[in-house]
Length: 222
Image (cartoon, rainbow, N blue to C red; front, side, top):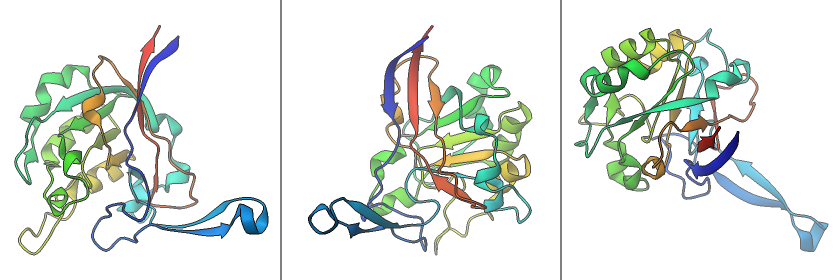
């Protein structure tokens, strides 16, 4: 087996990284420099869910597992891409849109919801993203899937003054199933080959609710 192609699915993390409202903004500073110390070392300050990241059950379940306790198998696997072409702002992704690929879902599969919303990354419109319907999430979980990722900042609706949201039901459902959520994925449109293998391993932050990842899709040749 060899890797024929790798597609980077990650946003860069820097001072311009778009964060969920109220989350810490990443900040970098030079802790050491070659000129002064003989080597470069960066001081990094950021939230646990900065940039492309994943959520552990502890994010919404007080007794849920932290990111360091999750099985690594949840962060890599054959992916099934669900296309949601040209969704309207705050579009609710329903089971009817997932049903065409339902026979390919099962234990060990990574579901990738491809909405194209990452093209709006960096602007206010990014927060008016599509989101997964709770009943659709329940039906995905019933197939044995425990990993759901998408190219928006939130798998649930992001509330604002005009949209109160629904209390983050999808986060709670996945947490209760001891699954993981991947958010802020990028460049899903660059997956132009069948049967991608996706990997997005988190930094092993002790007891954390989530962690940044370097997400990739790979075309494998057996």
